[in-house]
Length: 134
Image (cartoon, rainbow, N blue to C red; front, side, top):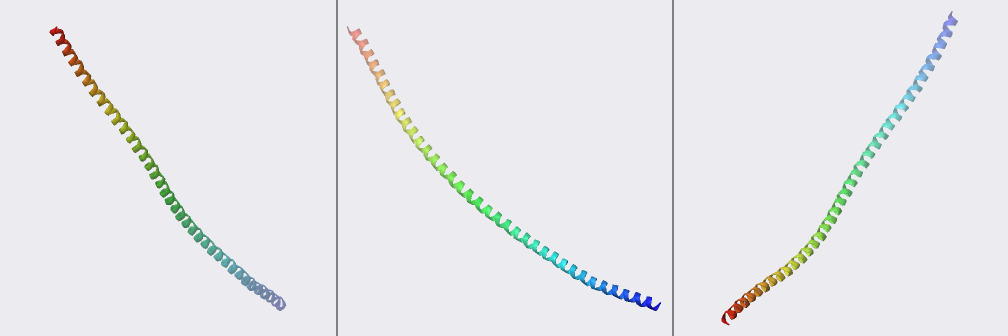
């Protein structure tokens, strides 16, 4: 019985030592896995930070380019307005000149018609007097 007890205690001791060794191995493995997870978490945080910084930089670049395009577009629009305004001023000047020329022509024509009417009246009056005188 003593031998069975000694054998059992020996087996139990070997199993206990093996269990302790395995528990330390498992603990070491768990520590390594935890460290790997923490490293992965840190790497993901760094990537997220880098990505956030890249997105902010892209937004700033986009805003800058958009403002630059707006500025260029406003300049082009202002240039187009200047050209249109210049053309309209030239057209207005031509129309005014033609109108003034035509107005002067019509005024002269009206004056000539009045003079002709006066001449016809005088002729009519002198013709009527000369007929009466004869």
